[in-house]
Image (tube, rainbow, N blue to C red; front, side, top):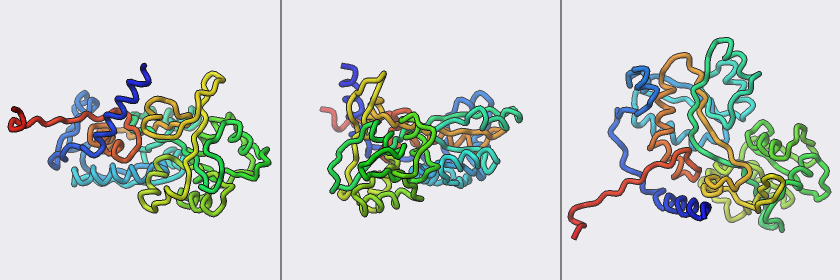
Amino acid sequence: MKRILIYAFIGFLMLSNGACSNSKKKGQDVTDSTQKKQGVGTGKILAGELAVIVDESILPIMLEQADVFKTSYENANIRLIPLPEKEAINALITGEADIAVLARSLSTEESAGFVKRQLKPRTFPIFYDGVLFFNNLSAADTSIDINTLKSLLKGESNSGKRLVFDNINSTNFRKVKELTNLEKVSGQSVKGMKTSKEVIDEVLADPNSIGVISYGQYLDCIKQFGEENKIRILSLQSIKDGKSLGFFKPSQTTFATDEYALKSEFQVLNYQPKMGLGIGFSAFMTGDRGQRIVLKYGLLPYTMPGREIIIREDNIN
């Protein structure tokens, strides 16, 4: 019964994807509890220059967030630095920027330098994405299970198939390793590319290849290149407490119901020593307008934006 209600709720929200409310006037205030508590003026958090390290798999949606924010606040400039997850974390540690949008927090070892400087991150969850598997339409498989994944990663498979990742330093690669509980991966049946488009091209050229990119990358590729009719999204096995729950494809719905096994939560990690534009941009992304951008893009917002219903007097009998 609970699952039915969740599906009904998600379905209702899907209908409102295109029904975003009209943009507010430029120079609007950003409602943020931190700002109110510490008495920070809106001018300090809505103007200036801000460098943001972002996981390269979410660059398209982050560009949308930054563009809408800059349109609303003309005195603010957001510079995005897209990098694979491992490189993004290194860039954050070495101080290339004080803010990053990543799918995980820093480990104890990685955050040691910030601890010495007595800097604790302000974290702001934004949205959910997930790892997606796909193959060539000429291949027979329509799903993939955990044992098959593990066999391919360990180089023990004799099927001739191989996994093709967007980058071996990516969030997608890490998440698949964690799902299969593997520390080391054999290169025999694993190949790393540089972009999600290269992964799609490889799968189109080789029916034995299984592409591994994020759901967000897939959405961006089909918008740009329209390859969705040439590839097949594979259903992924979901296991809980040693029991198989079935096979599911990534979507807003399966992210919301936790049915999809490789869901990723992306969040802002703000290590700025003082309040500034990072707070304003974070408040925008986690607020109603930013969450509507996520919903319309096709990913799952961390908080569902409200739906405005306008009742006109002339429509009332």
